Amino acid sequence: MTAEPIMRVLITDDHPIFCAGLRMMLDAVPGIEIVGEAHTGRAAVEKARRLQPDIVLMDLDMPDMDGIAATRAIVEKCPKSAVLILTIVEDLDSVMAAIRAGARGYLLKGAGVDDIVRAVKAVGRGEAIFGRQIASQVVNHLTEWGVPQVPFPELTTREREVLRLVAGGAGNAAIARELDLSIKTVRNYLSRIFVKLQVTHRIEAAVRARRAGLGA
Image (cartoon, rainbow, N blue to C red; front, side, top):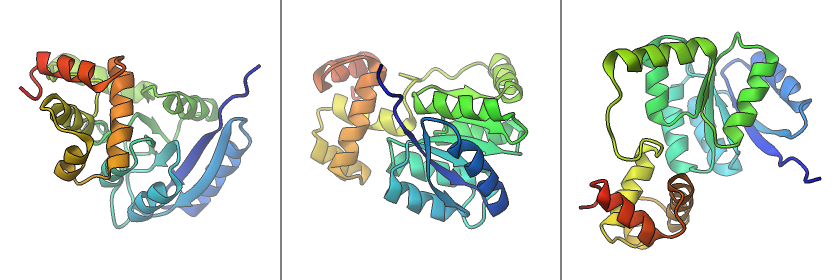
């Protein structure tokens, strides 16, 4: 039987006592390894870059850089790290801002232990997950206002930018210069794009993108 892959988690919260309790809880779960803690937004970004965790648990109310800005920075600089928001903030504007920043999930701190563990594992598998109250708000919002039609909604904004440049014929080096990224990061983005679009090479991705109006 294949062993369950270890999910490496970075905990980010400005309350050390909360971090310690969450760490103790998650450390007891098989398949989860806590690789570090951060108590400010900037520290979260720096530690995410250095540690390259699979999952970053992120509070929104953070000193020196709020959780939304930190999430956006981590998603851009650490494309292999998924951000799961864990906060007391539950207003719709904050939820939607987190989603736009690239968060893969959103839970309230009042969630039960099982819900938190389930969310961490789901996000680690590449799924998007939201607490019941949060999911209800999002569904109601989208039902009322409609969903904006964008090509490949399963991609993040940055992934669509990379795909647009691929569709325009740009190579990895040109994409890296255009978006101020390393070539390795561009390759990581392309790997994620190929998986999400279920293609095996950049030519197929470029064809699909041009058909959808990207890079035309």
